[in-house]
Amino acid sequence: MIVPIHLENQTAVKYDVVIEMLPELTFNRKVAIVTNTTVSALHLETLKSKINADELYVVTIADGEEFKSLETVESILDELFTHKLDRKSLLIALGGGVIGDMTGFTASLYQRGIGFVQVPTTLLAQVDASVGGKTGVNNKYGKNLVGAFYQPEAVYIDTTFLETLPKREFSAGVAEIVKMAVMFDKEYFHFLEEADLSEKESLEKVIQRSVELKAEVVNLDEKESGIRAVLNYGHTFGHVVENETKYTKYLHGEAVAIGMVMANRVALELGLISEDEVKLVTQLLEKHNLPTDYQIRDVDAFYDKFFLDKKSANNKLKFILPNGLGENVIRDDIESALLKKVLKTFSILTT
Image (tube, rainbow, N blue to C red; front, side, top):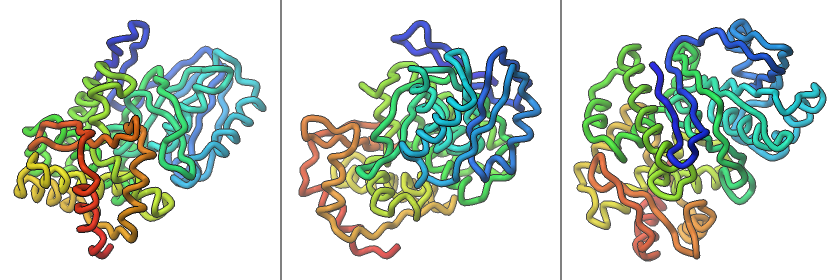
């Protein structure tokens, strides 16, 4: 199965998302695989056995969202210079969303830009993070605030990598799948309600549909000037949750799940979604053992962190909300009183 990416406003940018067993890969150039300690132990030898390259190097970094930083990117760059990679060289990201984001960002920086390929090994990365060219790192102000739009040369999605994925990591990926369904495809949402993702056939269908939806959006809007911003449903709230917990308590998908529940409460207050629809989304998230509660200790401080969100501009907060199931709306006119009212309902919950 191949899902093509062809950016509408950049005729030269075309690549494929290949969903099948990892093929043999031949590169007539230097190649460096970027991975982490956990993925390296599980999958590095498999990937290396598939690669034919002039020279092949491996850069291994620590595992965890807390290492998604400029300091880590600089350490990767140091190794690339040590191995004397040139402007024709290639990076391969082997890992989840953190590895993909940092490898892509490093590729955009090294000698003003070299090629990279995504080989995602988590469900979240396969259905979302590896597709579309968003790269970057976190800093003390928030998540992915330093980065670049930089497209890969190809994405290779092999579901056999998911066989070693911990259940919690798998569930975190489901959050991004639910996000796509709520925003774009009501029929897909109802399919997910019944689907057993432990079955290979159902899982492959879900990955394919999620990638197709993501590709449609990215092809129309690479840099989030319009519809692509909708993919951030749940993220405005979720990024604050991650920041408040210093990126150590929740996986990204878990924080997004909490963020979707918060966004749904705002949509409910605005009359965009029904109480029953809110319950259906919450139940689907909980079916996959995703968190749907969060205790906000300081509502004003939580609210103030919204202004660091990349979608906000001219001191206006922009929120991605469901407009029923399968449709969406972007709002930048929500009064602070309403937002804080919703946030206060979470300040009395227990984690």
